[in-house]
Length: 232
View 1 (cartoon, one colour):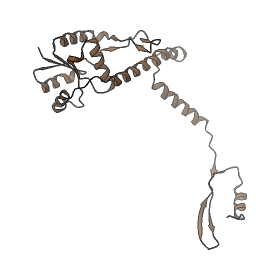
View 2: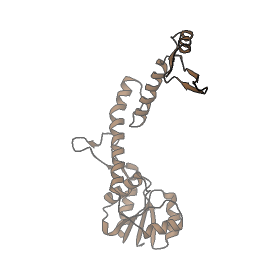
View 3: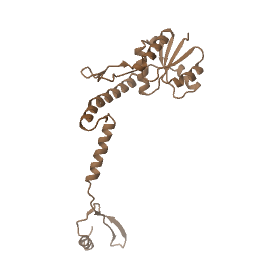
């Protein structure tokens, strides 16, 4: 029995990390997220501060069962999912679903799979970052609210199989608005006027009219008026 259980996201990393840590550590994988919103319902309590309802994915039930068994026999559990908000949410779900407690659970992160980086993370554990967890939950809830509510409208009104999303729908709207703006644009010719002036002291300097001249103005008449004008 290993005293330390390390849980990573990817099974491809597990064996390598286990070699770095030695015999007192056992490294296993969660294979990514172990919990998510249910696929056949909204899974969000809109009336209760948009509280999400999580379930264990059907393809992860055996993994969760195995992780529970392993964590019960370990003296210390190290949650080593990725450092981004998705990884932080995975660590949080593991903590909750495996029934872990703060006394024998540590959160570690490393940005490269090297012995030095892994050992350094063991020496510098931290707690689960609740802000990152909340950021991931907000992202997931928004994805579900937009996709679950709007996609069926697209199927009925436009075409089956289309999907809406918190990012893609907004981006599509921006593209559509810009395309309409391009199509409705009517080019208008205009001119800039610049001239050279001779001072009473015989010095020459250049100046430009600060505004553009509309093409409908008679340029010859304008030039003649400028030639005969007095400037202060």
